[in-house]
Image (cartoon, rainbow, N blue to C red; front, side, top):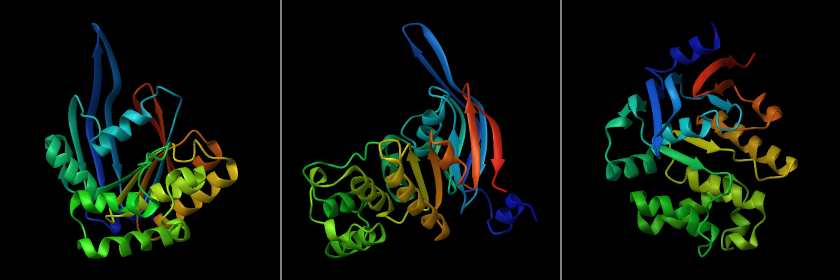
Length: 240
């Protein structure tokens, strides 16, 4: 069986489904089509890399998937939820339980320790008993080899260490989907390779990852590459 047929055989349907998604920005009378009739299916267990030039629509596309931004027309279904129908309050709760987001610049709260940063999503979505959250956060920090730094502030950590904490935070509510926007873009090549290896292990454990990257070497290691150009997916390549 081909790769996608194998995935279909183990899933009732795609984890992510975009139908004719358009995103238009209008400022000062100028109309810009950031996404144009995008159709996409991603199945559980895939490691998908979004590649393309700056301004091609990659970040807009993942902002649609995460609900950070709203589409102009079309449909977005994530894990059975019609994301395009959610209001702001429902969107925030849904996102906290369904998607772990990893940013290029970590976005850790500077006044909170690593373990407190990891507990934030649990507090927001009321996941796990309050008395258990520190233990759960420590577990996820162990998974990213940061347990020894649990009580340090972000300013006491290197860039690579902060990104590991950010990944632990993304995992805190055990979401089925991890979305990462240039997660290695602010790291040196050795640290970037280590972070990417962590993503590969997460996929092996059953997570689904959609990642924007400009790193061609890393893009060749994902299970599926999508080339985005002028607001459209122009190429879809499965790993051999």
